[in-house]
Picture 1 (tube, rainbow over the protein chains, first blue to last red):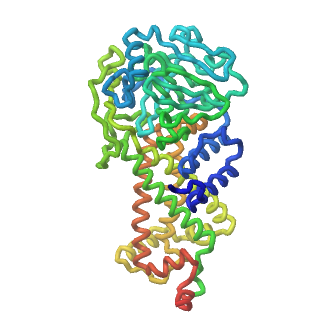
Picture 2 (picture 1 turned 30 degrees about the vertical axis):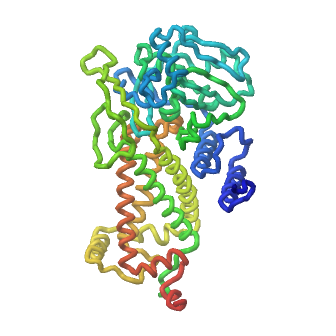
Picture 3 (picture 1 turned 135 degrees about the horizontal axis):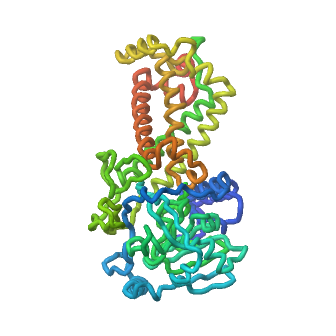
Length: 256
Length: 254
């Protein structure tokens, strides 16, 4: 059996790089996604830190005219209730299929964590908040772009309605396709970050994340999670493991 | 050989850091391109709208095709949505992370190089043209010399020929800044703060297309640059760029 306490040269180099990056990137480790010693993840964290430092103001992204609304592909999971989907599970996919067949009347977004008023939000609850509309560009990491109109509640308004605590740093989302991801408070409180229930003036279609998806206009498309199920506000970074980006080789911060 | 000057330590350092990051940027950029090797113009471009150019590049992400498009509106030419069938998880994210990491190396190297280039007057003395040097006849005569491959063997380091100066200046002060700015234009968070970037390049997809053609120019430069190194004595050129040694130094050492 290999001696686990043995410090290999590789581990020493990794540890050295990690401590060097800790010097370059001040702040406690819970502020940042873990790198697991990977140089690429250190670079991602550097980009995140640099961008928050150099571009501290929450400027709105460009908005377009209705006539500029374009065709838009629906990719990734396009129906979590589809039993042929490789990520389908009875627990999540089966539950989604039931909600979908019931017109999402029983759908609830569970809001938990660092909030004064945790609870369950229906689509109607979200619709009681001021309805916002934006026509913005969706920017996919694959290199394609599309312009669509999104209707929904500002994530900021939802967080305020839940009494988000001052200690809160991250908003974590779980979806019905099993995916989990998070954004920081800067992106969460951006004036164009939406919980979108409508698209191009209609209810959000299933392939685009019905009944409610996240829309983060300042990030790559994959951060705008579809088929939302749960929203947990935390004071520290939470690594969702194999259900999330970092351990699948994806960048947590894709804003640049 | 009193008029020949060695490559100084900072020039050599920035050359190799730049070379390292350019190669990493080219490889990772190509991996990013392979996910969707179509180029578009304007703000919008995706598989459901016509491409400006379809590059003959194989894809590194396979999926199972598209279903019937569904229109959003009643109108005749309404924008549509179509479902792309899911096959495997896209495993090409390393390309973007490496691209940004290498871009950071390039940014810091570029700042270091620009600062020292001005402070040491390197740009003025060696890179920018002397009076009349970029005239049509000077450049043309240099082009003819190069076309006939009559390139002086001992030319490691400055002074550079007019064509060499022109090439370095175009790459350093035109192509690389264009790549830098079009790269930033593809960042939603950066264009939120600096929307004028979208205006100067005519939109996200135009910036992506220009970014690609600037990469093609850098690739062409790299090919010619390496060819010139080979034609003018690769051993001496490499010694010059690694150790800073001159022709005579190399002979003394040898």
